[in-house]
Length: 302
Image (cartoon, rainbow, N blue to C red; front, side, top):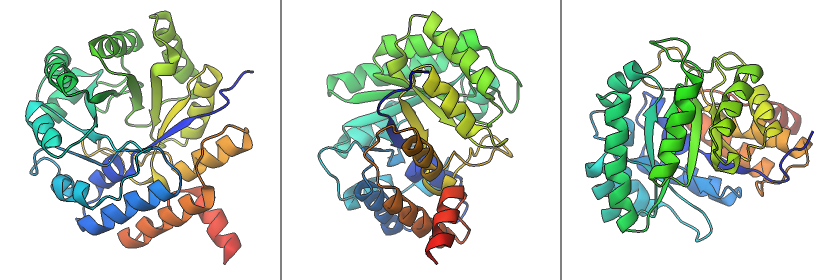
């Protein structure tokens, strides 16, 4: 079994994590979260999203937040943009990296972004063409790759085709999201084999698992076995999906890091600082960390 020697952790808690919290979090607290994540050694931290405020009120402070982050030159702070209007706002605030998104489910796309898969890809192409004029890095997200809350099981071949399309349009990387957390290791490897068969460089593929059925770490390990070296995660396991009722949080970054450390896979991230960061935001949110590793370390250090 050959595993990657290093893994890039993409921290999604400030955007994908916090967007599902009903309590509106003050901008300085969000900035403190991002600054702590930076100090823990994470090199990619998804900061926020330039969606319309009524859509996701939690992220209505994107401009103010970006002005408060203590950025480091070797750290990437991408933002999610839904359309050209969102891109315009991001460019106005000097953003250097963005993410675009679609789903492998027409129903999910219609509920989420009010268009089908075909139209969403056309919208993404418009964003990418404009972003490339400004030398912006572009990451792609595909939701519902192993199941949809409305359509059930989704088409793996279609997922591979969409991933190829996003890469051909100009995305440097595509994240495959198990939005409702129904995936298993076997299904995960079947999906990745479809991707590889579609002549996609596995080095350009990231995985993004929710832990609804407790399979996230197993799915990540299955992905590592097939050469995936980019993993999305959320500190303290915060988050979910506002458009997928009942979907529990993202896999906890602390738990992923502990597993990677045990496999001697390098990340450059400090586990103790990460646990402290997860406890910081969990305490503010008023609930316990969803990370088993954080709970164990915190109990040990009491």
